[in-house]
Structure formats: C-alpha cells, structure tokens
Length: 389
Image (cartoon, rainbow, N blue to C red; front, side, top):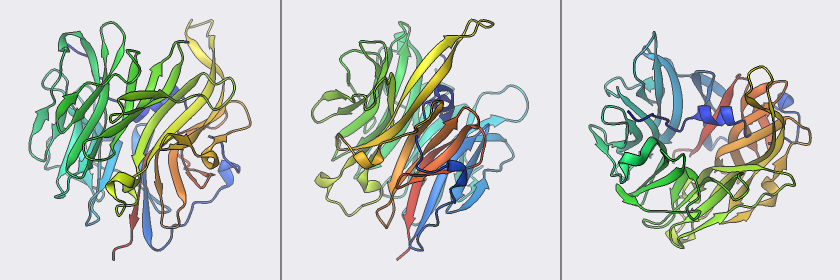
C-alpha cells in the first residue's frame, strides 16, 4: 500500500524555513486596508485554521473534526471558498476533505477518503479541487463538483508516495502540479496540463520537488520548487515550459545552505486587465543557513543554529526592495503567497520564527512585518478583493 504524503502546511512548519522585519514584529499594528478592497489571509495554527478578513480574525467551526485549511479561491461574484483536510473527532478513520463557502461548511459534498489541497475557479464559476483520492491506491485526483477523476500516471510500480501541491486555472486551461517519491528515494516532478500528464525534467535528473505552478500564456506554465544539488544542499529553482529549461536560483546571502521556492504567482491574480503576453510571474524564495547537531540522548539531528530570510523574483530577476534578512541568529521567516493591493503595496504571507517565541503566522506589507499571535502557525494564502463596482 502506497504511503500518502500530501503537501500540507505542516511540512513548512517542520522544515523551519522561514524573514526579517524592519520593526519589532510584536509591536506592529494590523494594517487597515483601503475602503476599496477586502484583504483575506488564510492560515493554520496547531491543528486548527483561521481567516483574517481585514483586521478581524475568524475560525472554521464544523461538527466533523479539526480543520486544516490548505487553499482558498474567490469567485467573480464574491463567494469565498476554502478547502482543507479534516482530522475526525475520536480515534482512527482515514482523512477527509471539507469545503467552506463564505465561512459555512458545505456538508452536502462527501469527501471521505479524499484529501484535496488545491482549489480553482473555472471561467463559468465552477469549482475544481485537486489532491489525492484514497479509495483507489491514493491516486492524484481532481473533483469537478460531482465526481472525482483520477489523473493519468506512468511508472506506478516504482512510486512510493504522491504529493499534489497546487492547481491553477486561467483562460480555459488547467495546471496541476506535484511530485512523487520513488522506491529509490528520489523525488520526481509531476505536471498535468488540461488533465494530460506532461513530462518535465527541470534539473536534469536531480531529485526535485514542485511546490507551486502557474499558467503563463495559453497552456504554457512555470513551476518552482527545490532540488538536491551537487553539494547535497536543497536549492530553489524555476522551470519555464516554453524554454524547457530549469534555472537554479543562486543563493543571495553568504553561507546559505538551503533555499526553496514555495510559491509562484501570476500578476493576473491582481491585474486581470493585462494582455496575456504581458503578464509577469513572481517567485517567492525562502533562503537560510541551517547548522545541525546530534542530540546525544536521541541520536537524532536537530537545528542548532539558523538564520535567513526571503525575497521575491519578478520574471527571473530579484526585486532588491523585497530582500529581507533578520540581523540576529535563530530568527528566520518564510513566504508562501503574495498579492498587490489597489495602492500598489506588496503583501506577502508566511511565517515568522524566533527561538524564544516559536513559529507564528505573519504577513508583510511593503516590508513591514505583522505577526498574528497564534502559536505554531503559518499564513499560507492571500486574496485581495476589489470593491464591487
């Protein structure tokens, strides 16, 4: 039986790959949005989830179990959907997914034996979910409102576990990405365009994971993640389907030994009036230094010293104004998603970690850090909704 390891926010917390803040994050006040928009920030803390709507926080109550939010999307008419995984009350039981619409659980959908981590809205307003369906060999699957459909695969006999990480829909095309672990211990990227498996080899046969992808124009796409480089360090990369070339993203700071691109965002997310060929892509890079020691009692490695930060790349070039690195040791941050508001302010969401305060959800507005006071948390998605005309 194959082992399921859906990409979830938990892996971000365990990797402890997180920024620097221009001010003391504990002293920053929430940002008041303009009257022209609504800012939604979704995330998790512990085994629960939250939604910050402007400066007001709410939670995802249901009668099934603890809810871990994984993705959200908003329709043209303003309906906000959030999908995630439920840990059922009591002992035992396989995982299941739950969909929320405007904060209310959609119990009419039965997602038992499924774990959906991504949501997209088609042109006609139809909801599509992507993830794993557990009733049929834990396969990558899409759900179209009524039924789950398995995605095509090859070489299944050598696949130990599958991960589905994101879904994107744009201009009539659909992109689903992820990766699998084979029995040789190597991670192999997975890409589906319009439900067809596309062969990609972003880093010339190296063990590589895809954490996010976006459609660029037509059925063309870009994906990001990290791979095991020649020095046995995990290094961030970008891959462009049009060129067929994977590009290593070089370390920006001295002594860094880990980097990953957790997200890639198309500018159509906040500017739908752009011509298709003029859209920009933004890759979100977390980079840090990690030094490991061995616990003499458990004989397990642990991170003894860490420091680092993050930055954003636009169309392959680092935006200098987004480069942040906390000046003190054992304090790092990561970013996972981004958007731009009506005042052209850059919003980034992720986590802030320091050795004394632990991991907390956080967001940054033009480089200023705002920590959400929830323990063991991460802010994972942001949507900025313009005012209704």
